[in-house]
Image (cartoon, rainbow, N blue to C red; front, top):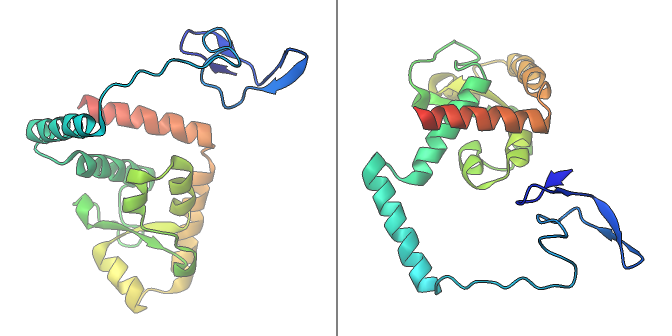
Length: 188
């Protein structure tokens, strides 16, 4: 069961006025938001005012950290993925510069999109599904794989190890692990 912002539990189904109602998509309990009662929406700002507010936040954040917030999030998430994959190249063991590490899709036909762009805009479930198709390699090994120097059987064997690591996580455990790691990174 989910909790409302007031702390009360939200059941999945409930009988209201003699009919069963599905409450799975609710974020508020029936006390806070009864059926057939429209909540008053507060109009905060016009689109232009909101855009200006976002712009001010963006530049102030960039000035404080010295980095674009999107780039900062992308770097943080890549560090988390590197940690999940062991932090070093699956082939040669290189682990010096995280920028030189990349995710190679074992089967290019199953590739939906790049991991780096997904982690910023996509849901965690989608990223998790895409990660399972990859191995972590350094830039040099990635080039060798693309040219065909590295045997495809080796790559498949490495991908099986990745699947064993990731399959240990359920979606809830993955979310908990991710939230804990983000909290650690933000604290530092």
